[in-house]
Image 1 (cartoon, rainbow, N blue to C red):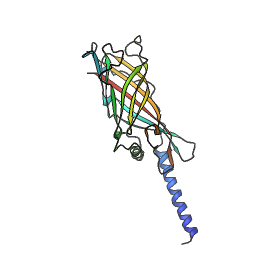
Image 2 (tube, one colour):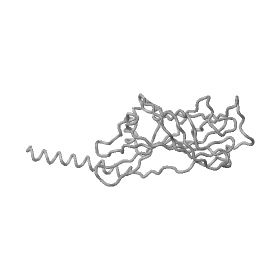
Image 3 (cartoon, rainbow, N blue to C red):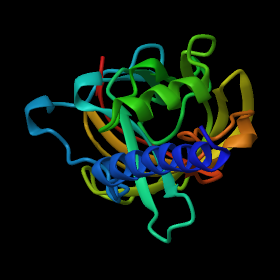
Amino acid sequence: MSIRTIAIGSGLVVAAVVAGIAVWYFAVREDAKLATQAPAIPTDLLRDGEPVAIDGVLTYRIIPEESEAAYFADEQLASLSLPSTAKGATNEIEGVFFLTEDGFALASEPISTFTIDLTSLKSNESRRDTRVQQALETGIYPTATFTIASVAGYDDSIPDGEEQVLTLGGVLDIHGVQNQVTWDVRARRDGNVITALATITFRFDDFGIRPPSFAGFVSVGDDLTLQLQFVAEAV
């Protein structure tokens, strides 16, 4: 077999691989959109009267089946000017929030946190999910945890059930790295129910994560956006 024949054959194999990846990319590409508003208050969860504080603290617990944690990442096929935004999500979320008795501020104790099970993140493509799990090293670091240190922007003149624009400050722990971060939040509170949309964008390398890729042909941008949409109920 001549060198020329081998070269042609190799070129055809490479072309077939590239074509296969391109077909896969166009089949699974999506243009996922970020949420922009806090979820509506589920009326079936509302109870008469105000929640009862214990030792001066109101406790709200996230309802996983009513909530979602999601990542958004920009993907690009080779040098084509056709980017897309991929989304992976899970409702495997645990979280407890502690407020002062009037419900207007974060209680200093106990500590409010939420935790996301990263191993359960799913997108519209299993091969992407595998790459994401590898990049996050979920076998070693299976969860992401945010410990809330501060809440700013709450306006007690806004009626119950209306949207508040807030920020949450604290420590985000992902991939074994802890960073001080601030989430942008849109929230609603009506008696015993709180709903919220929390959004944050950061660079993968802020947490020592290498952006996932597919055979070097599909690349992922340097930034990752996380969104948490949750419903929490007083307990």
